[in-house]
Image 1: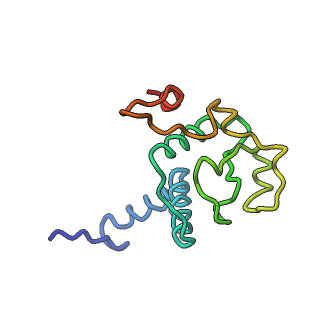
Image 2: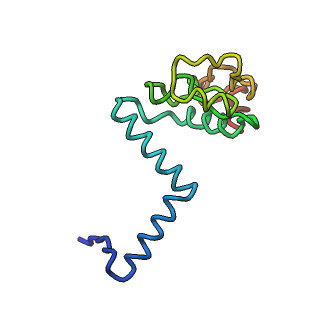
Image 3: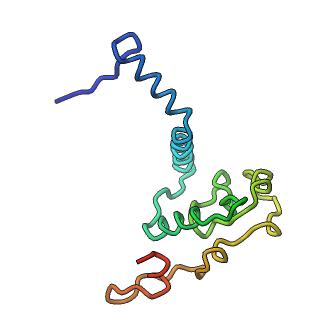
Length: 145
């Protein structure tokens, strides 16, 4: 069986590979990848459900893409406090307020929060797929099909 071995720093190509990895880890994409891995690991330790449905994943992507300028997507109950990474636990907060809130549960942010449902103009509950494989119009418009 073919086995791929990592090159030690003293071998040809090993130094370049280490330098490339260090450069990637410092890039925005590398930092995001590291944060995602750390969050997944922490969730696994807490015993949280990591996988989400395709519909929730599509909704989450839409929520993040349509975030108003000057705002950030915030978890109402922080992930560090056992909150879920799902649409029902998300809201928009101004950058400064979200930084002040950080991972606290006792922070009063209701005066500054914007519901993502109001920005996206969709109902707060997702309509499941209709009978005989047909999607209701609201869901079809939301999913862009």
